[in-house]
Image 1 (cartoon, rainbow, N blue to C red):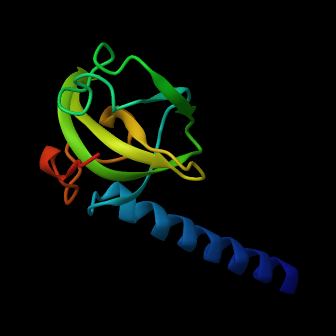
Image 2 (image 1 turned 30 degrees about the vertical axis):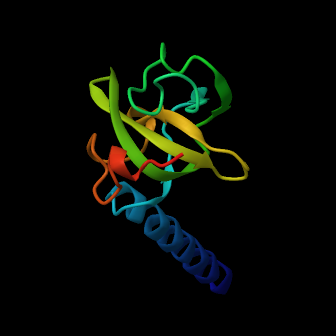
Length: 127
């Protein structure tokens, strides 16, 4: 019985940590770490052409890397651009463990709405 109680307590503590870390991102409370819900999401080079002011797959053709559903990205700012999956925003991100940044469609960010509350708009996206 003691082993069972200890296992349940450990599982409860783990669930509390997981829920707490995920809920902060899902609510959209500004710059910070957000989960990604899809695999093979392209992070694009935002220093070329019109990418930083009008992000799209055409304006941001160079891919600096890909991320998957188990990855997290630090979201710096959001910019209106090409609509992906009905979401017209793109976000400047730096994936966890990377020493570079790029831009990706906000469609793939775990958030309850298209716009991420508290994340600066295009004026906050200095390159």
